[in-house]
Image (cartoon, rainbow, N blue to C red; front, side, top):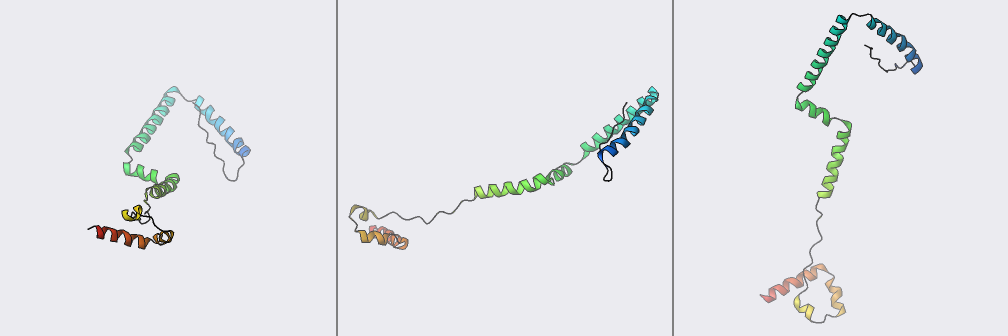
Length: 139
């Protein structure tokens, strides 16, 4: 059995210094494991498996709320959800259309209208008044 080695570098040690310290320690641990009896190795393996099983059970017992809370506090979610909501709101907003211009009265469509009258028709209020009067005159 080989001991695990952690590849952490302390702030005051460079990579080569860290390796020079870790290498002899790992070799010494590997040699000490070689001299253990099979019964001891079996007991260590059983203890390790029991600890891993206990760790897995604890992770399974975490509540759904804790899991959701952990997922929602992730930086990608904290920035992505508001951005996605902003895009959805922007897309779903219905822009108000301009006022609907009423149709020209039928009598004006049939008769010839002088060019001066077209200039007056550009005024929306006049067109609305003209359409309302057309409707009231038909009643």
